[in-house]
Length: 377
Image 1: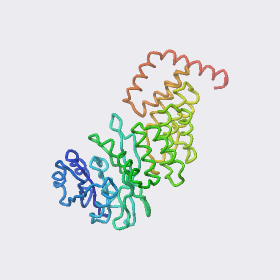
Image 2: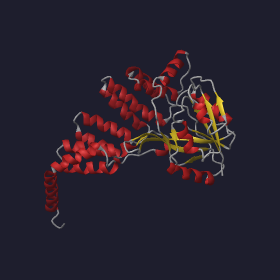
Image 3: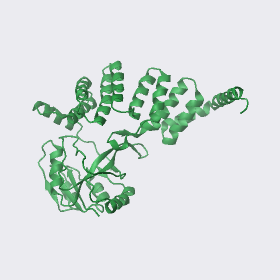
């Protein structure tokens, strides 16, 4: 059985730290807490679970803080979590089994990270992260923000999901401030930092500047393919926001140079046509989304709705606006199979119940037309 040190960096997390540690305390063999400047009772809360609590002077560098925490771990493997992460009860037994059964020559364990949830608590935004690494093998975080350990060696993909259950609003301007300070200080941006800088600018509605940075990123040849695919969508969002719709559409199609169309891109293109009343084109792209490749283990940001509910409910709208009520009804039912509690699906059901006579007539006419074409049926 492998042994694991949980190494965390925290600041002012007294309200939620126990939730995280309660979910994992029986699964790991050591807990390391590195405090980066708390002014509340975070250390006192941590002391209920471990005596291995250390201070680290914050340097606007998440990688530096996490690497400091990793250096304190003494077990065979090192694991990281944020204070607002939890390992759900249903995943705990799977985690225990993994510790018992996994080969001891594995270097990196990748685990899915669920970062957003629907009204029913189901994950709608996931991606794989390097969650556990071999101690003493030179694995280190890189990047002041959106820090990452580049996976290498023998990699194992686990299906044990970590949930990022954010309980409070963070400092929304922190990341952008760090990037802007990096720029002022003349610090070089690698491709990953440039990509995330562009995203931060877009999120802060600095669309023109965001477009410039994302264009610069896409001109680089060393960017990670998943970042490049997502950058085309963020770039399109910037162009839509400043009224350059043609550039926005062209940005979306640039993703096809990197891989087969993903569901997220197909839905974006479908929305482009639907918003302009071009429903046949929209139908094509939303249909593609339903059968699109979900690059689960690539590390891509997966928006689950783009592979089921969103294209289905959008196809319902498109067919209804084209006058094909029967197809619209069928796609609404498909949408309901993904999210039966969705208010959009339920409202559509009420609408279709009011016009069910018309839908029945369309179905009967189609059946009759088919009988005429093939009388042997």
